[in-house]
Image 1 (cartoon, one colour):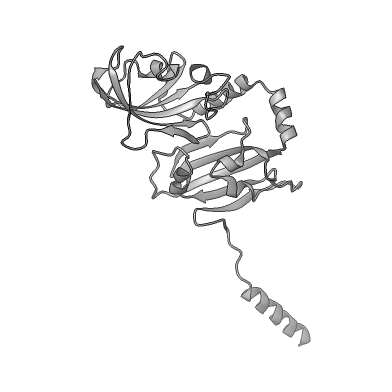
Image 2: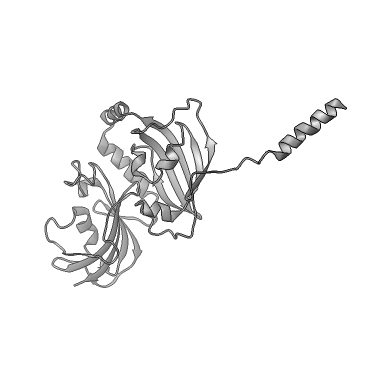
Length: 270
């Protein structure tokens, strides 16, 4: 009888125990669950650089890819709150709201705010300042850029190479074409391959310039724009040698060996 009473008490305790949630909720924007972990339990420390793969999927379409080839600072991305919860070797599945990512300058213009994104993140390594210096010394930055660029371009459907610039036509134009001396009115959103935006035309604040005027736009944009028609929309991927090269921009906003992505629309050609 005594054994029976003990069993009943134990069963009642387990019955009253709350069920463990499948997802850990970080905040109203992100929740995640662990898929795999490493035994070393090396966690993120403030100031670390990270090597990680990140993929975002809207319904069945991949809308974002970040590759572990090039380390980055988590603080400069909307994934910081998630990454700082993880250890080296961890893999997680997470859900995130597009509006939150867009408000943190992630270029997801094609994604509706009503769709919750599925995300996958794998942490390969947290790098201290000394480790990141060693990583850069051991790896050719130009080769790293090319490797990431090639992987990125393969994810873009119907992309064409035009003199070193990759173009995906989203909406065909009509009428007059871009040529020397024409005045162009453009709308664009510019980002790095990791999706972080660094420039845009801010809604109705369009950019206007005369095609062929020296030093108005980077060489890759001149190559892409020539021959495009009025009202045309395109995604333009530009390697660093046709953008800001090995020195980066004079403002420091664009780092050396940075490939750039422009989601661009021609508003008018005069």
